[in-house]
Image (cartoon, rainbow, N blue to C red):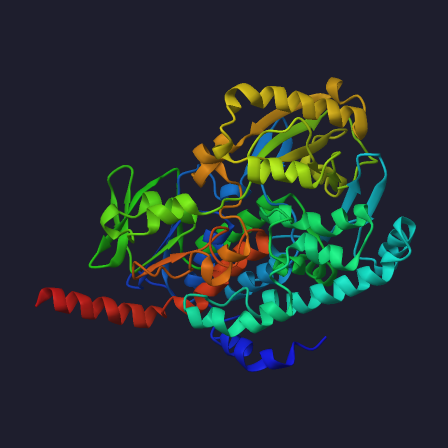
Length: 539
């Protein structure tokens, strides 16, 4: 479908700004004299940034306070069970393929991707099921069973999603928005694409069946947004999944992380320093000069990239003298995504009938989301996402066993829930619900168990307010209005990850690193700047 006609020059002009580096040519050789890029955080965004900068000729060091790379994509292992801690849905594999080619390799050298079908099995509170899939006819048949009149509306919704996808993802997800004119150029497109509507409002424009409305709107929760508040820009996810499918990395997302670290260390000459915490970004003369570790060690750098939570970076990692006057107020006044309660568990039996991804919707939809996002109270009911990787890869559990995690959206820490008190009670309630619905006999078969609460998101990942996805993806916190990938306040400081443009989710996080191709100067230019600065200081 052609892009909106009047967008051609404005949008393509922005897109051209990030086309200097993609997949052509081998990586630039790195030596000890190469300019140094220091990356704070070994999450997917930080690792992707390290690969891109290393391929351009930067000497890269990645520092992470955890004892393994991956950040929220780290791996938990117990008694032969393998649990991906966080993201498991891969919907834009070309972003990974591009990283491997930049390093002179192929993704298939390290990672086997396997398509998941159905994408999601959605189970309504009454026990009925909808298989959300990439098969267009299967989708039409299921929609026809819900309401024949909604088949045409669904097709029109998908066509609208494609238009948003063309602009919002294909052309703008990887370009910088650090100039207000960038936002001005796309405002007509946003109005034409009805971005002032919420995802829920856009879905309701096209379909009438209440169950189908939930099926087409839940995706925003996967990036930390409430469909009743999130801009309809995020409806592009529907077409993204239809166009590129849903994939799983055999062995788990941890295999993607392992492959990325191999690229950095073995192909690009970079270094990972794990179990070391950055205390502060060093700023002199308005420019980032390196970092100071909790141990007191100082590391100099020409470029500093923070993959830490963006709010945490501005509030805690920058020295107070380098923070913009508005930063504390903005950090406090920003809206943050919901928290997550995650239970990782293994069973000593196999549940063959359970799909890889299952969405279990509770008795309330809008009311529950209002409790989570607005009232910030822990409701007695819940909706759940159940991940069963062993449906696709049995090797993630011992023979005859299954590995799972179940995730419940909950308020972030402003909800003042005492998770030390509530966590086990909440887990037991979820276990009983699963046992009564799709995992019969679960109580007697759990042999491995681990919890992750919003408090642990705060303590282990240094996530502001324990929010699982950083800033909430509402319209006034998107694109130019989101923390910029190139700091406006500190020269030589760059941000990647869920809390910056374009946002959360694996495609968003990987795209945030892609933006660096445009905003980070080439190593030669950086080296020249350092030489000029050193000469000036000597004089």
